[in-house]
Image (cartoon, rainbow, N blue to C red; front, side, top):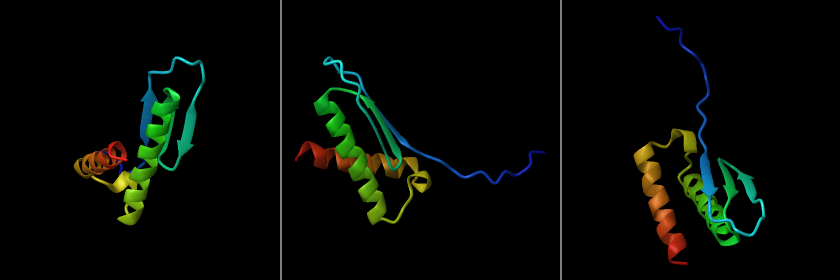
Length: 86
């Protein structure tokens, strides 16, 4: 039998931008996210997306580690649609 563990759940969003051709190293850390690389435009888009996902979760009073995958997928889709239309 396995002993029960009292480990905390952890979750985070990871963004990787692969279109950087200007030689700049871009790294952004925030609440629940780490963003690496990308062009200036791509990195800014990743930042906006990560911040809006966190805002969405805050409005719902939910933590990223407690949100079911299907629900997170829907949140990301909604955020992506709002970012694309702005």
